[in-house]
Image (cartoon, rainbow, N blue to C red; front, side, top):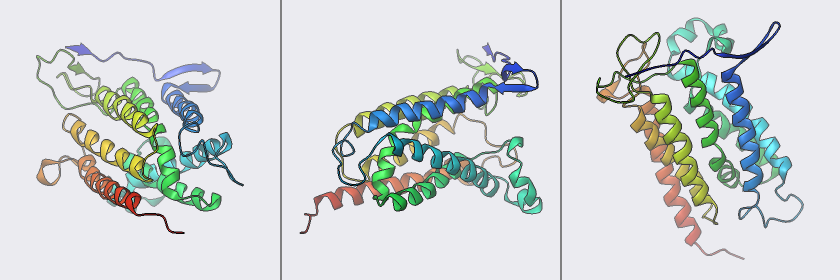
Length: 273
């Protein structure tokens, strides 16, 4: 049985300014997106696009900026609507109290989708082409976020069998060993999903299939990990013994399957002209 190391959430203090580890993980996520986005420019079809608006490093910067806005706004609104709708309906001004915590990945994803719609229209590019560019660059950011969760000792797992070698006692979660679900998510939704998507996206694919693989891959992996993650205390388990996170993954997987089939069929239709 392991004990969660009580890591100081503050990485550095400069007078009145405190730099938190969680903030540093966000910076790491942004840096990784820039690095991978520039590498993605060498993949087809982005490398061979010419004309008045070829893909460039400026696109990576703009996508990152809009993506951050989408994550913050969508993540916060998603948490308020999916997890505590009654509370925030009664206390609407607290929606803006982001420093109190409360973000939803699924809401953040919806926010990014909206931001990328705006970006695609402003650049006169197909929306799915933009999403296919972004998708392989996302999992490393998710992995960085899970590192922050582990450092903070939050979002821990369900109680584990005492014989589990890596069962961990988290402060604030009682004396029983639990699954370090943050580590599971880091390995599955972060590293594994990144490797699968990156290798798949290195070769030209029907437009939309890289995005579809992300939806299916993340949805399935998150659904599995939720069996080991402690459900939100104020929600518990919902219908069929599933958590809110699992129910939010269901439409994600179904949408990914539908997009995969649609993209494959669309690629078989001969171009006209």
